Amino acid sequence: MNFSIKKTWPILLILILAFLLRIYKLEELFYFTYDESVPAFVGRRLILWHHVPLIGGVTPFGFHLSPYFYWFLSVILGLGNLNPLAWGFIAALISIFTALLIYLVGSTLSSKRVGFIAAVLWSFSYIANVYDRHFWALYWGPILSLIVLLCLIKIINGKEKFVYLLSVALAWGLAGDPSNLVFVFLTILAWIFFKIPFKKSTLAGIFIIVFSFLPLVVFDLRHNFANTRPFFTFWQSGNNNPQVEFSNFSENTLIFPRAVVRLIYPFGDNEIAKQYSYCASFIQEKYHSLPTLLVLSSLILLILFITWSFKSTKSTGWKLVAILIILYYLGIQLYGTIFQADIFEHYITGLFTAFLLILAKLIGVLPKKIWLLILAIFVSISLYKLSLAKNSHGLAYKRQAIEFVMQNVGENDFSLESLSTCWKYSGYRYLFTVFGREPVKSYVDPNFGYLYGTTPIAEEHPETVVAIVTHDFTAETEEFYRRYALLKSHEITNGIFGNIEVIIMDNSNGWFDKSS
Image (tube, rainbow, N blue to C red):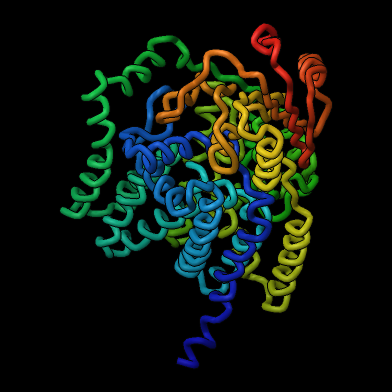
């Protein structure tokens, strides 16, 4: 037993630290906005009114995915008394398994040294930590990639029972986000290139994946194919006409080496909200902060790795990693360059663990004192960066803003409005149900009204209107300032929490409905 503890305590310590680092300042840094409020409302309706959804998240193509991720989130939400912060704790717990898996995959691909280095890189990486605090459909990319790689390696080596775990992982991934289709293609190519025998277990695995779509079939049969019709409408509308946009090609290529650099150190400021933002100005800001030399070096590293994996190594595992990178690259270019869709870094989170495995392999060839020094420096700068992290739009500030509203409106009816250039749909309507009281009318009623259960929606705004103004980190638009001045002109009181301003307004003369 002592021998076992002596051998395993370093990795056990890393697993514990992976969890602790992800619950550090959890409420303060927790990100909850529109994308999170959708499953939150769905979960609330399931918990309070026992409405079990048969469809999950919607895709850019108009159809919905299977509901398993929504069911999972609903269970956690119920355990957390509807407080989405419970998602943060579960996400941190799952990160333990991600760290363990990257250790196992690294050990399988190369050596325990590489596995240990990869586990350290994943556990302490600032960007990995930040993305692990965003518990949404794309959260699963890193752990899914590790499960798929480990299962394929085992299956190629003759352990066919891993087909079942692989099938469950693929079914879960397909229920989360369309980008996880890349793991299905990786599996198909692995069966072809490595000549994996087609056995009964393979057929059973295919059945598991197909059977996972049963809730969608039931939904369509009950609702006159309401889920599949939007998909065919999308393709018939002409929105799918491919046109190569070469101006996007370089940007969609650089997203890969940029992610490698940011996993090591993100540079830029310490505002977490910017890391998640869809706004072009903040995306450009975080990329422009990266040293060009490091980005180019990372691009060369990825090219050399892919070349080496196919020409210089007999390891099937590293070949699988290389194929996964190529599949992601082709998918990003197809979706972003040919179909001209917007591409964001979180689309390739499934490669984050692959990138760190490559870096671990590179670091692992160095003498022990050198790679230990590199890890020490990496851990130090990562912890320093995390200690400075802040979220001016975080859950803690949103809770404080809602509590301020409740203190000032008392038992009076109020409606909810939101004003922001980049952050208007920030999940406030749901959070009022958790930390305060539901408004009688709000800015997201057209989107979420059907999920409110028994809560009625007023036709007009009451005498008290509450506006949540989420201030940006840069200059706002003229329209913002015009609207902001109008709201302030009717202000009764206000409060500021981080970058969030609460404006409580008098609407006794009905001006708000007229201005809207």
